[in-house]
Image 1 (cartoon, rainbow, N blue to C red):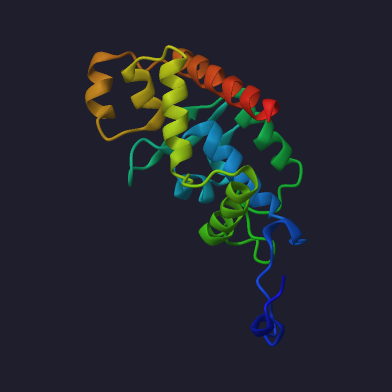
Image 2 (tube, helix red, strand yellow):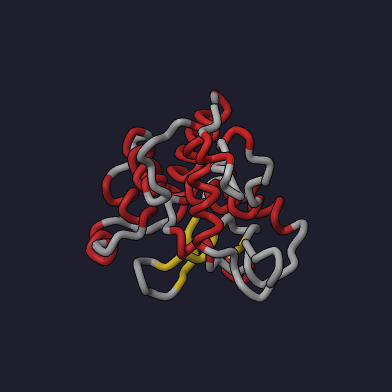
Length: 190
């Protein structure tokens, strides 16, 4: 029921279910990449095609906050998303803005899309950064040890971890594939 005071307003608040504006496809790709990589939002938004090596199944991400980028193995799910995006490559950025291809999609666009996704999925208090925690949790549940998970998430103690663990990409890629498959299975169940 519309209140009398609401009838005099120029714009009424919109019910989320009645919204017709589509969610940005690039924002949806950003959310999927966050979920399947465990990366930080800024790392995905600033990802350039020069950071992507589809042939070797890697993307260059910072080894930790603020460090330079280096090759990081990713799951087949990530490679499928990137292959799909590569078909319409129009910028140096993997996720460029619609109106300005020289800039990456903004954090606000992705945050807005995430709020709509959360509302639609009835996820009350889940932040985008929580997808990083989900990735780490699934890694532990898949049998990954703390060293491999630390490497996948590029935590600050990765330097110490490298002293004790061989940083061969095959076990990391295997763990990344297992996590990616579990997340994809969970999404398909919804």
